[in-house]
Image 1 (cartoon, helix red, strand yellow):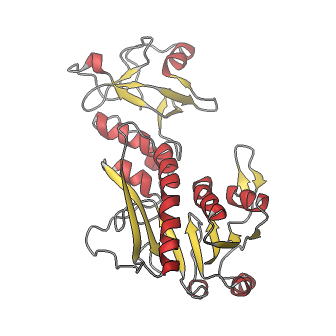
Image 2: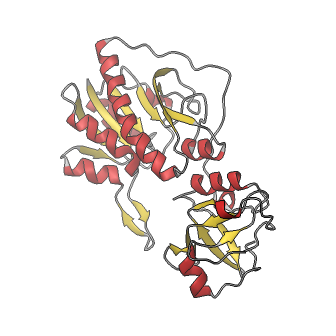
Image 3: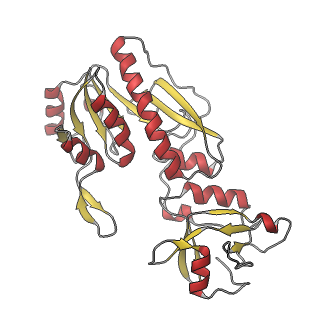
Length: 312
């Protein structure tokens, strides 16, 4: 098939690579978001997908909105049989959806209809799901509501962060997307409507959603920290300043001990122990405000912590 690929972040790169390498398909162009500020310096940068596409010699389209007449005209002139989509990041209007004969086929990182929306991996971790996966479906006007072509599933690791899980799903999902396009080309796949039951939503997590509540049980705190790593970054406050937290583990040596939520107890070489509503947690990596990541032990030593201080 003659294809156009739409995607923007690093997450989309495995699928783009798979389509570039596919002997069955002709990748004619790539659609991605316009250059935008990125990184700590907020310098204007091209998206990872644009950089890779340019390196491969592909035509790159960067409309501010995919409803722009110039974009629609160019897409129609390219005349793709299908547009493959992975994390493009913009709402695709009906007039664009109608251009390819086989529409736009989206790779979404959940088992639909669970976790429709921008942050499916993060919400799966927050909810304590044991299994997640990826789905290919026909893009339509609704939020991830289109009929499904294919599904893959995987077990979520006990200590996996959202970043790690998304990276794994992006690689495995690239195979699912390629197989879906192969099946469509061969006339072997027909999209099936999503179930009407089991719908859950996964809106983008904001900074406020990433604040750690030490009054919650240890397992819920661990899930929130993993769900918010690397973005938007879990945090708490200490001495009135923000403290980022990217990993914790159960303080097994203190099981059964009652430590008030947020109170710091142990300042040993294995980290800093903090109380929760259930078992105490031992901090792993932390990030003091305005400073780089470090171990909790290094932070405690530099901040001259004392037992009994509180994380808020």
